[in-house]
Length: 490
Image (cartoon, rainbow, N blue to C red):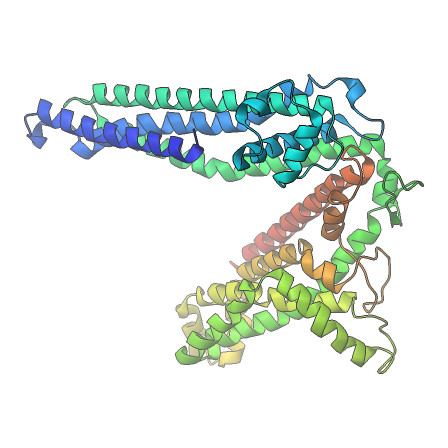
């Protein structure tokens, strides 16, 4: 059964439980609402909640657990002899999943019947031609073990989906029956519903924490696996970044220092552009601009935040880079050899970050109480003196937070760096040379042709973990500075 229809069935059962519980409690009270402990809607909501929530939780848990169970079951069926020396079980399983998807496409297009797709005697040539006609992506030569594993993969997924539908509907019906039977005038339905809503709110609030924990754990385990294959000392203190993918020979140099230098260098240039422009724009909009000017200028400024980063990257590649070459290149000062450089990416990234600084700083400055301004004016201070000595110190913690948000956005940017700064990993102070960042190399390492179990692929997780720790340290340091200043100001 399609997932959408299963979801609709659960909602229909919950809606039916709501109506039945509500009508049941009203009939038991003789349509006298004064005889009820709670409003009739609470009795219906209790039945609907007990019907829908457990069923949907079971659905989500099943969808999360089934891929792991099926993958483990199918992986155990693949003999070691079917795995080539230059491959791995993970790559074979990826091919099995692609073949299974191709069989589904072939059945849907009519190139294969369902019975033939499930048949253990399916000929390899017939299967290959059917997959090609259906447009399936199969990157290697189809083999008998892969085809058999793909058929088993489809069969287990089909069985799992069928049992999932049955289990979810049964749980929804049991919950509906339970909620309807509880509907009696003396039942404290409002208390039960409010406790349930509070539990749902707690669960929603926990999603962010659990998501962060999952991200950290996924990085930690793969980072540990990387350091089992590659020395940590060479990674953290190496001055060269030269990965050599499998099949090309040579050893890989995976030193992170050139990448960190490029990341911080480009981010510093971007912040040097974004912070002054964004902060001055926020001061003008909040303190000097008339309501008409503010109503027009602020939305126009915030449009910059809605432009896709790939568009900024193209702007850096096609406009800013050639413009800088004309000014600082051979025809100008002779400092710049190509359009891809730290300065190109930094300037464009700084333009992208202006609305992050200006919009947040503007809201923070406007939040400063007007009484503080009036007190400063009463003491004889001018408007500029009030802004400099009263408003900005009071808004400084929030402004630091806005700058930190912009810095985090700059550190995590990828497309502008790829198109505007190049891909060269080097240690240099020249802002007119091409460099790259940690995020750009994470993308390139995970899209390369290396085995996922190799250091060249696992290094992406070590890079991500290092960037995570650095960003966390910056946040802690900024929080310390803000709290210390706030204590002195108060």
